[in-house]
Length: 263
Image (cartoon, rainbow, N blue to C red; front, side, top):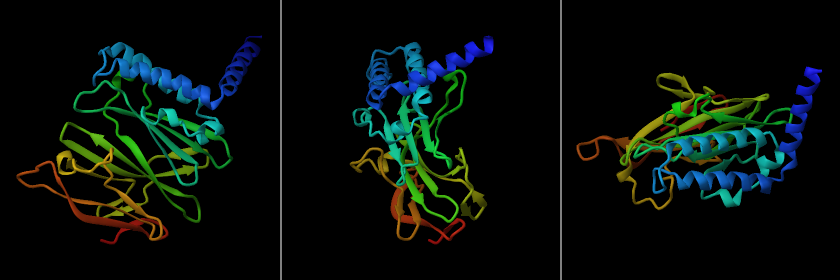
């Protein structure tokens, strides 16, 4: 009888999750993001306890609704100024990144990854995996997903920005794969002089690129025809010890197995 009751409760919760339209899901998320902004460290009425509650609520909503295909394909146009939404070319991988509003000059971000497995089922993964959300350290803002098609499965390159202070920033280029029904965020397909890795990272002084109009600043690019990505050469000097972004680029090209440096 106890097992039957538990099974019934799970079924009821599943029906409730799938009963909401994507627009209603967006409405729920919008309410929590609006409350989060109201208690933000960046201009709101600071309340760290409410920040914690709202961030937990947002994470739970992604977990609750993130296994739905209609949510994966929904544009969420009213949320675009509340969080960063990036989708792969094939529509099988999406990243939702948001500021937890609790940082200072160093900003903290959460990311929910939604993806379609080989079976066609949609899954959700919210990073970081923490029981106590207050233990969250610095996360980066995912703002681009590039796609390289291969014989086995696509390789996705996520680009994210780390904000360490007013001047110190950095960007990650990370290789991601969907392995069956699992999202592999550490796919070691980038060959560097030090061996295989899943991520390339570079730091820079934000004020060396402050004149770029777009936010987040776009520094990493992908060439579909050549299946290559590039990122800038950063030089440390007396004026910019944290790194000055130059007009020169380092290029990695996919050789059928790995991304290898060609320039």
